[in-house]
Length: 129
Image (tube, rainbow, N blue to C red; front, side, top):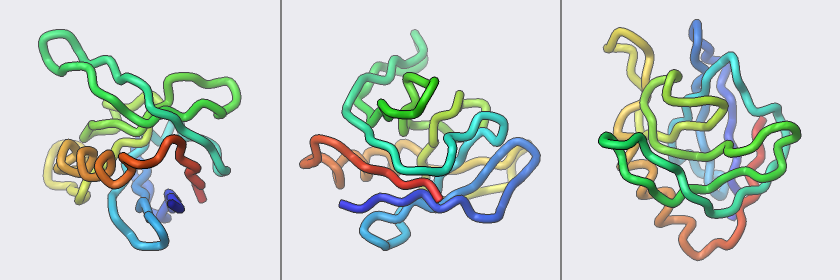
């Protein structure tokens, strides 16, 4: 499975919008915190746990990058706003500027679809361009 995150030239004040391609087909929208970006390159991810906010969100399984120099716990996970990310790519289905801050929507739906698409994988290679 080939996964590419293509950083579009769309950059807002605090956000970077990207498209995730799976086997060269555009599948998801990615939102990143412009001030804490993963450097361009190829990285590998394994399954791990994202610890949810107590009383707000349960823990759940994610893909976590393990070879980003100087960084740990960088995960592809659910979130809608750049403030939901501390360097983690947030996954969604669409991008919207209708709220007070640019955001991605249907993040949980996209995340569950992504996890289902990758359920047979033991490791992912993700290229960020």
